[in-house]
Length: 154
Image (tube, rainbow, N blue to C red):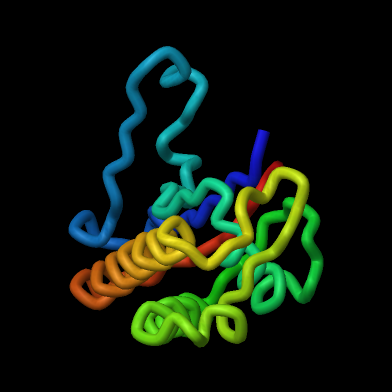
């Protein structure tokens, strides 16, 4: 057991009658459950774009800045501005470690892992920057609209 954290990207892919063939999405499903899924009824594709394990400082940030202080293993919408803010906070702490306790403090919890400001902590910040900046770059290159959601479990 432990703190597991997920960032997902949800992309709208519903095809409408008024759309031209070039605007429509092609969705196919293969495998054991394929016959139970009707591609014409698919409205969204959801992808896991980020996963953390016991990154309690990142979880703490989401709880305080996205979840209104509710630490309840729920699924919460995350705006692009919020992702940008988290990335900027991570970069600021990576540039000046003395800002860690102020911008991205750790959060103790029975299954939340270590609370020290060590190599592991800073490695998780680097990983977070890679995840967020990667998806933001993808959005700009594709001029696409996505929705993002954060969820945790322990």
